[in-house]
Length: 128
Image (cartoon, rainbow, N blue to C red; front, side, top):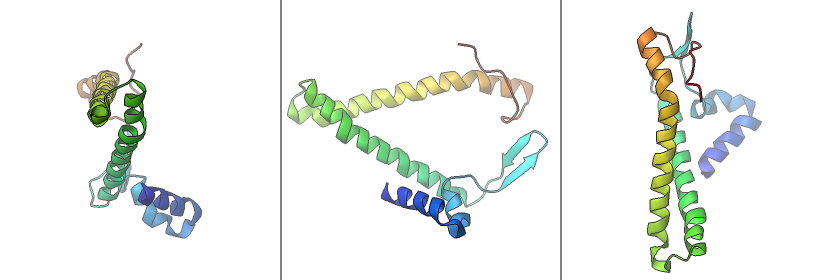
């Protein structure tokens, strides 16, 4: 996490190195088209992906160790079972949030696949 925060601080406060740190926060090689922006594949995407992997891993570690194990203690779970409880709650939170996100994005994907539209065009989302 310190690595990502350090890169973000350098990106913000040192304009001369932004061409190098930009790779960690934005996709590279944008190709503008009539329908919006399309990104081509390149090796520089590894920086963007690795930053998200580190961010997700840190989020999981902080949530399990500092929040969910504390919650286990508050709920009266046996001391030796705190980590097991925290891991199971994390799995529940992760899968339920990913499932919910997929249910929101599924109508958008269906419209894109059936109309041949690009993802950058305006398509109607499901009405909730």
